Length: 162
Image (cartoon, rainbow, N blue to C red; front, side, top):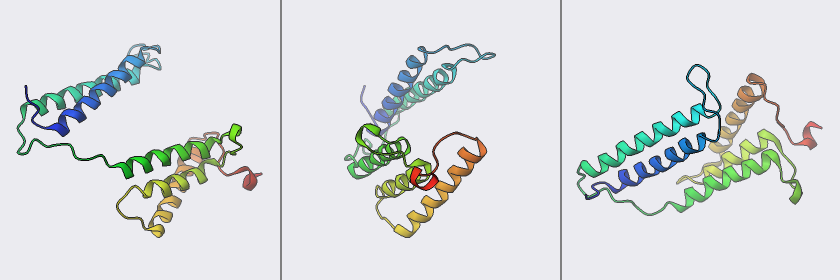
């Protein structure tokens, strides 16, 4: 059977693999049943749904004809690197790395740095717009996670909050 859409085939395959991994990983936890859900119930359902969606996309890529075969383009290295780096820096800034002498700087600094670094992934970078977005995201995160959900985490660096 010939692949008629490379993009659909490989994206469906990715969904299938990730969904299958989540479904298999969910069996390390108690599944429970729909009346009494365990911690593995939701990951199992999401994994199964992702795998089903992936299988549908793979079958579609083998059946539905596309004009040029919908080839996969080159890897977008810049967005890939900056998005991964942004998340990595957020984790480091949120919790710190005591073994390297990096203190935890809190949620606010982490979100602002995450937004600034991730914004470099796009085709254009406008500092004023990115700073406004970072402030909105930081305030929104504070309202939702600290004030609304009352999560206990460091909000500001210790040299500011004491």
